[in-house]
Image 1 (cartoon, helix red, strand yellow):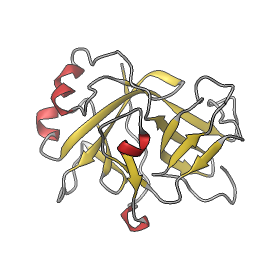
Image 2 (cartoon, rainbow, N blue to C red):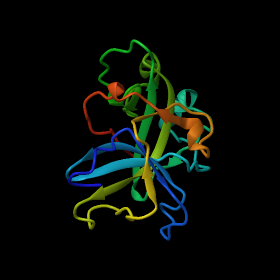
Image 3 (cartoon, rainbow, N blue to C red):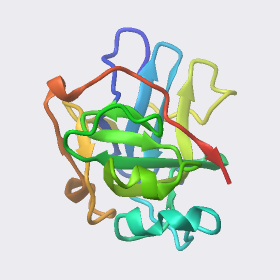
Image 4 (cartoon, rainbow, N blue to C red):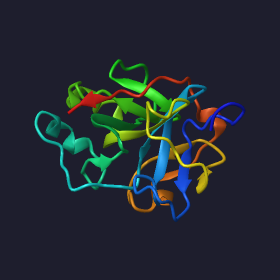
Length: 186
């Protein structure tokens, strides 16, 4: 994943079973950031029974079904990351950080009534998966048992257990800059 390997930002990493690490067995990870020092992503196929509590419950109307918090990964489980689908024609918005194509990271400290003008689907993740050259800084990914989508993916919803229903390959032209995803401590 480092060195000469192609960047995986905006792509899916799919664990091919079986993996011994329960954090990653059968996981589908959407890569939010990837550079020479490491990568950050969220597991997109693990909904939890946890709902958004106050004051974040204001975001429930924007959440894609199922409107629960997803288990985004084993790193920093107090961090919440919101990914959203930007509406067509959305210009610059200080509450949104572009990821790839129409996928943005939404600032959960912002007023969702304002953000709703720019996005139409939101999914919230608790924690994330991270990999670094120094594996003591993040949960390292096992080498075997992973495959990557050949092109960036766009995540747009319905069935979280079927990643094919959530994400599809997107054109490489849909890949804007590389900002860092926003996180909020719960």
